[in-house]
Every structure is written in C-alpha cells, then in structure tokens.
Length: 478
Image 1 (cartoon, rainbow, N blue to C red):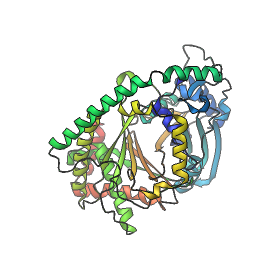
Image 2 (tube, rainbow, N blue to C red; image 1 turned 30 degrees about the vertical axis):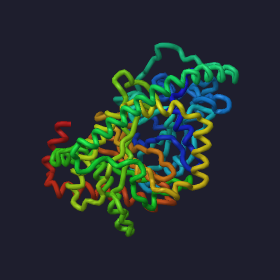
Image 3 (cartoon, rainbow, N blue to C red; image 1 turned 180 degrees about the horizontal axis):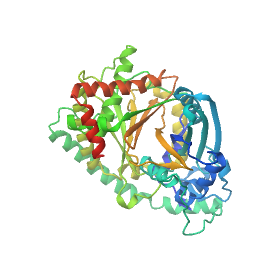
Image 4 (cartoon, rainbow, N blue to C red; image 1 turned 135 degrees about the vertical axis):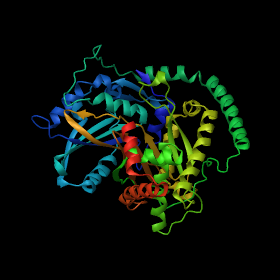
C-alpha cells in the first residue's frame, strides 16, 4: 500500500462531472510490417508482459472513510487487463477530423475508480491502413515526465517485441479494513501541525524573495499575477463535451527560429500558441483588453525521482504577449517573461505546492470543486489564467508497439472550469506533435487553432529569415 501525495490526490478531488482529470495520448501507428496483423489480443499480450514496468497499471484506489485523508494505492487483487484494453473503429478511410471526433468522445468519458485508472483503445479504420492507440491515465498517477517514462517502458525500440522478465513475482494486496484506514490516517494527520508550521515559514520566506526579485529585476515585463488574465469566450464554465484536434510541426525549423531569436524551444512553442490564439480571437472580433496568460506546468523532478510515478510538478504563469503586433518582438517578450518566471519559481521552491496540497481534506476539496462547477462560478470572475500550454520533451528515437511503428504521438491534457483549452506538445523524432483539447460549447473550432500553429510558424520563419538550410543543419545536429 502507498498513500497518495496531496498533489496526486488533488487531481482526484478536483474532478467534476464537467472536468475529468485524466491525461491521454493519441499514437498513430503503421502496422504494415506486423506479421499476422495488429490485433487486440496481440496488443494485450504485449502490455501484459511489461506491467511490472508500469506500476500504476495494476494499482487501484482505496479511499479513507469520510474522506478524512488522501486515498491509498493498492495492488488490485481483481486486476484483469481485459477491463482496460479495448477496441473500436471509425468508418474507413478515416481522416484526421473523423479520428479526432471519436477521440473527443472517448476522452470525455471518466475512468472507473473501482479499477486501476487507465484505458487503452485500439482504433482501426484510419486512412493509409494505419491504426491509432488512445491511452488514458489519471493525472493522480502520472505527470508529463513520468508519463513519458511510462511510454518508453511500454513500447519497444525495434519491431521485435522485447521480453521483460520481472525480478520478483507480482503479489496483489489485501484490501484494508475501514478501521485500518482510519488508524493509518490518524497517524499521518497527527504530524500535520508540525508540517504546517514549516510550510508557513518556507512560504513566507519565498514570498519575500519573490517580492525582492520584482523590485530589483529591472525587467520591462514581469510574470503576470493570478487572476490577471483577460476574459475570453473560452474562459467560462464548461460542459462535459470535448473536442480535439492535432497537428505536427517541424522540430528542426522551430530550433532554427529559436537560434535566430536567441530564446528556447519552449519560448517558441508559447509564441506559436499565442499567435494562433491571437488570430483566432481577432477573427471573431474578440480583442482582449490585456495579453493572454498561459499556465505552464513545470517538472520539478530530481534525478533521484526520475523513475518515480506520480506528480512532481509545479506551474508558472506567463504572458503570451498577444498585445504585441510583431511576431519576433512577441517572442522576445515571452522569453523575457519566462526568464523571470523561472527565477520566481526557484525562489518559491520546488516543494511549496506539494507541501500545501498535503493539508487539503479530500472530502472538503471535492465538495468545493463540485459546488464551483455546479454553480458556474467560473462565469462570475476574471479567469485565473486563459490557457494551459505544456511542452513535454519526448524520445528522439523511433518506438514500436506490438511490432507497429509509432509515427506520431499527440498528447491530450485536461481542461477545467474557467479554462476551456489545453494545448500540449510532445517532441518525437524530428517533429513537435501538438494535441489541442477544448470544450466545444465555449470554443467552437479547435481545428482552426491547429491550422493557426502552422501559420504562426510560417510567420516566424519569414520574419527571422530562417532558411531550409538552417533547418537541415538543426536536423543533423539533433
């Protein structure tokens, strides 16, 4: 048994009927070289042979009575992989929009909390004979970095299915009694007053340091504060419906732009998303009264925590400089803001968010989240931020699942009331794979944003004078 951290448990508590807190990825595979065909049985067998490399896949939740403390993970005594590996199809030959429509519907479905919190959908009928794998895993179990590690562990480096022999035999847990759960919770809660005192001291010190940085930085633009974001049509209370779009951009070209401007790949990603959003809102006559604000998840995982599952993540707020007309100047502003946001993040400390989430009572937090959603209070105040933009470094080498080659891997991050759009990107080989999840009742055409990313990159290429030779050089350098 293992108790969830406060941060992991918060993703369970914040889940509402209109906001499900699972992360997902849509992998497109070429099964043409798979002897005997790419079947559901073959896929289930490949995953079954390496479940020991993916601990969350055999662990289920056990909740403490009355929600007095965070739930526990136990090795599920009733685990059956047939409950998790599933099959569906779109009418052939299914194009991107048909696939994305199905993905939006599947992502809108919650995970079953009585079983390990994951699903894998084999989707057939794609154009060109390809297949798709849609994986869903609850955010309580993984973050972006641990999800990437999980991806590599579950896939192969060659078309041959590697054999992974576990060092020890898997043993399911006995489900603890309510008395045992309450006793364990009481022992943990008894130590909280000391933890609260330490957290208060560290937070006060961090606040003073952040204030000092703001006064002495000399920066022309500082990171935005919470609730400084302007209101847009997609910053509203959500319904349970989901729409999805995806696209890929050339990574060497993005790196060439990065070098020309003197910023980072992540800055360019933020700039591309900001430009796409700026154009989207302008086309609808929605010019915000201030720059859009992005919430950027940041991994705080140390080398010692590299192989650990769960969440080791914090977040930063950054301006997307959507009030700046020139695309290169916009990118330079984003870069400056991110430099200072990282300084603030270091001053606050990697453990501050994790420390405070330890003190949230699951029952109280869950009721508050559901009340906030049901009353549509997101419509009554300025948004905390406008959009979530996450950039996860992925593998630069080819991967295979049950013999089929991974062609692209489009990530899918959650959305919540007040922020109806998530733009997540993962690198793979020489491409940046973007996945855009939205609530269609507040953002009408998520495909327009996907197309806007290509237009935004073309605009930056023209403005910086980046050439095909520059991009080719980046591709050779890796």
